[in-house]
Length: 149
Image (cartoon, rainbow, N blue to C red; front, side, top):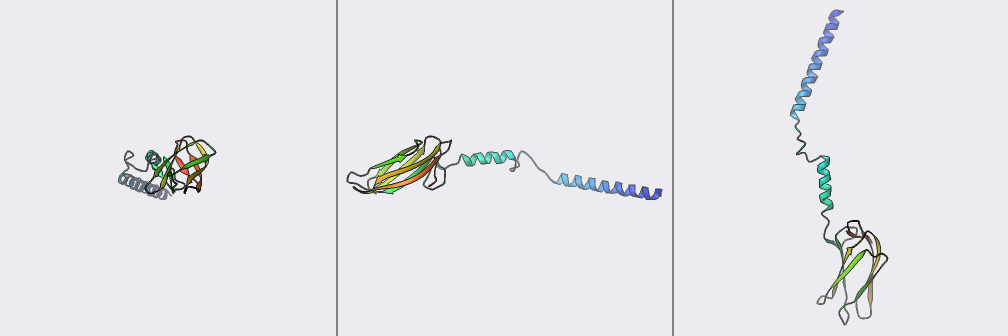
């Protein structure tokens, strides 16, 4: 009986030594330097901040935040051009540049305060005809603007 117990003890000790040696070998082969590892939580956080700060200066697309939203249109009157707008919230500033050679309007909308705005832009396409463009724009807390409809 004692021989079987000694054999079991020796076998258990040999197995424990093999497991310890193989674990040590695996740990020594895997090298990770926390300072240079790109997948850390801090690394991901800083990457997200960079993406947020890389908003475009301007956009003409729907559902894209930017510093300014641009809308282009064509029209001509005897005096050149005329335009106006209606809004349900006073959180957008509107500027217009008109190209007298090409007879094109370029409207620039910039957010001034947080909120949703239902907006109608009106402009002359001829002396007697007005065109209107209905828009829904959203201004975030950073005054970035996005046209949603």
